[in-house]
Image 1 (tube, rainbow, N blue to C red):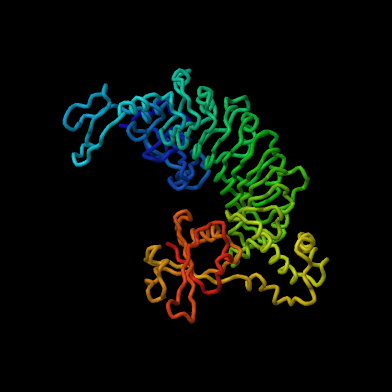
Image 2 (cartoon, rainbow, N blue to C red):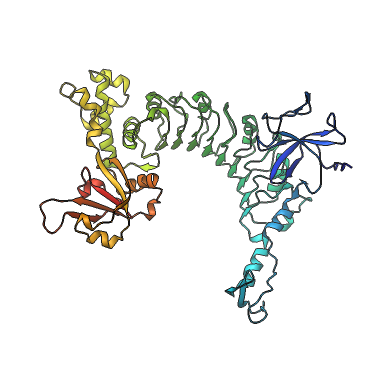
Length: 540
């Protein structure tokens, strides 16, 4: 006997089956079967078996070919949504069920004693202020940061139910719930007067209404992996006047449009989308306060200079790593973004087979204001060195200064700063290896030894064998801080936990053949330690 489907389930209702969420797209009979079925579209595009087409009959339509299924309704199987306050209470109210007390009964009035942890009599915990903690947890009104992701929330509950709780929530995570529309979001936020941060990641929401939603206090909104359309973003832009930070990662966006809202938007995250044309990105140039733009993990082939001087005039930080950029003109174009000081652009075809130092040379040489490259801060000394290397490398692209400047827009500017290269005396083959010849080869090793023993070692034979060894080339002007960052990427050891020691071999000394020294002054560069080819840096 089939169970009747509750009238509360309608087309568009959000449900959960096991740990997977879905949207009801069809309610009715399926040809060749008895009783009613729920035709659902899973949030996980690989969870289903079809796209709503079953045995040559179209019952509903899905975004993906394998995100649709038919399921029978069973109350214990198909989970329906709950209210905000019910989820909040279940998540944060802690019941005082301490029953296992060491020695004597726990006296709440004294609020001091000892108890067995989890009933394990081998673990005794002294409790001081335990009752106070429980009382604080019961006071929902004191909560500032609230995480209610995956709590099956579908509604705001009875009118003013949230408001009457007098909550002080400032940061709220409602990701991966069963809310289906923006009106419900608005009904919740209007009752939270202190709310400024809202996360709705991996939600599935219908298009927002044009009329005013109650979102005006929000400063940070996260909509990653919600499949929201850019048209819906346009609609929301006029209803989020205070928004400063918007996350839209993983939404399969490919086409954008100019937005006249978002007057206060400073940070826009569009990572992991499908944008392949910089003309789409240029439509964001009119956002007057945009300072940070994430475009990493898209499909961009090139970057264009701003069409007008007022476009992107405040952009300070740009991420374009893991795209398909394959031309130097794109980097040259970034020199025309007047406020750009931080850039991440690695893992693009243009940098294929190029070491970190050579990447930095091209980036710093082509973009005059950049001070942080791929997470590494460029010191003034490093900038001078990198610009000079870049200036010399330009020579291979022309026989006159004018011809070179036509290919390298900053060439003449750099000549004024660092002096003109002697085109007649510098061979092209030498310039191609100019940077390479200035690099020094260093062995990065790990040894099983204490710092004190390493510093007191006099002979190579006294050292334990290396546990690992990697040979890398470094600029002598690289700071110890940047060396640590590189080692973090190579050896997966956090930079803050590294101890670096330089080992140098010496000759013609009877009492030693080894010198070791501490290298943990992050502001010093390698040149300060008189480091040379073949030296060893031990990481402890």
